[in-house]
Amino acid sequence: MIELEVYAKGLRSESALMEFHSQMDLMPAIHYKVDTHHDLVYFEIEPGSGVTLRFLNEAFTNIGLIPRIVGQVPAGLAEGHSGTLRLV
Image 1 (cartoon, rainbow, N blue to C red):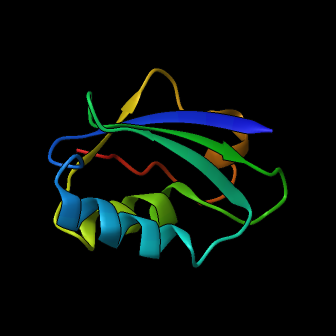
Image 2: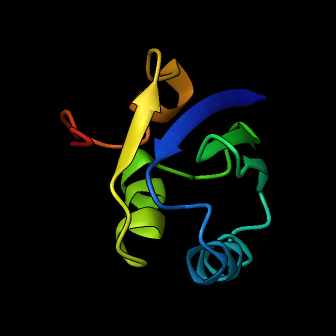
Image 3: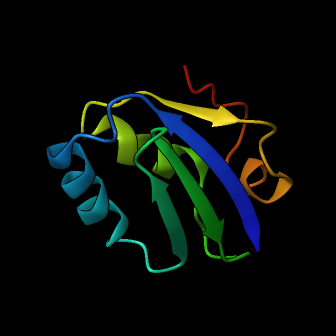
């Protein structure tokens, strides 16, 4: 299991939260828990599922949020794309 924690300011708003849930419904290999008090999302991603940082970044940016990874990028996600992807 690949674990990742992401901070996204503004996630606690009801509209952003509903849109985020609909984005995550597109990928059943991603299990997540949202901490609305701190605008955090805790992800558990099944290895070999094809989930990349680019996909996760787009899930946030599509709804107008800027994701920031807390800690290091797990090796399983870093291998999913070529080159480095910076989440600003």
